[in-house]
Image (cartoon, rainbow, N blue to C red; front, side, top):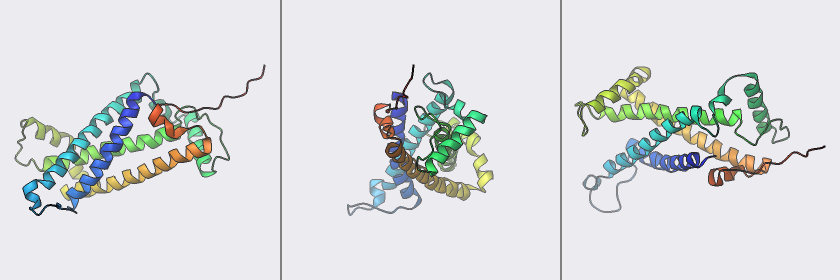
Length: 226
């Protein structure tokens, strides 16, 4: 994993924690303050919304970078593993069988990202993009006047690219519910991801969990005969 992807990985991990904590508060304020003054006097909701928005912006930027690297990375082009050809389909199922048989069957090259893992991460990035559109729709809903601190072009652009979510989910409340439940899908994905990385580290014995720190892992060399 390149340095760029490792930075993106940990930036996303930190932003996800911030987004979940602040997003839950925005949906249902579950704390006020440890100080006696009313929460409104210390802008508790405002700060939660600000941190949520900042985390979302970083998510958006990294999503664009990852989308670019899917096709134009000089190190590895993940889109090649998404093409539904025979090689990728066979590899996908071999990795899946390896998982459900607890490594009793391993008929694929684990030295690089496989089709199963690429599909798994693609689902995550698609969920982030979905959160982007629904989240920005909820944000622009609060700019009902059509004005913003940076001009009218900003609300206009947000309406242009996100209003379709209103029709798909039946209005603002439907978008809000879709955005909220998508968070749980992402949290389930994160739990599966952490489990799978630990699983690979234990069963494959290649140090997979170290990839996001040092960028590489151990790979067993095949014995070569003259």
